Length: 249
Image (spheres, rainbow, N blue to C red):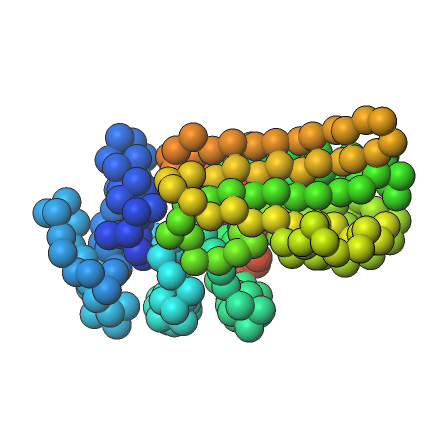
């Protein structure tokens, strides 16, 4: 039985993860970490990582960028693997993950969905084949409470595209229609925020007289919860290092 410390346990994603874990017999939530310390009785909830006294095997952080430093400090002090699924991290925070990975196993992905990571590989392959003959646009849509734009997944897809291209693209965010025509080394990224959209990502390759579209639609947060739980179970058996969905797949 794997004991999980769930950071962000009282957030929207934290509640979904807790519900998914409750359905399994190979892991359990041993403790929660959240600024909201209300507990539903299933496990204790702590407001500060320094106060945690539960026995845990691995950490899942699905909270807010501001909580990352405390989570990493706890993970390093206790030599516990950590799955970081929080989006909107700064470049400095991503660097801190890389530094922590020299001492403990760290799993970091902009998206915990298996389908999205497959889409990323398909985008890379499509870019290799289509090259500079097609214009490339990324359109992503999320709920109106999402704090970052463009999404981490949109950037993940953009990076996959750049790996497949023979040139280094420039990312253009939400270009307006009155702008002059894009240059061939630009990838347009458009962010939509509205309602309760879980997550929609579309990559369009527009060429002369034909359009190729690759698309992923998340219908519930459960796909991300399942990915995070599987990542936690995978990570506890790994050596120190930085891991992603590619390693788990």
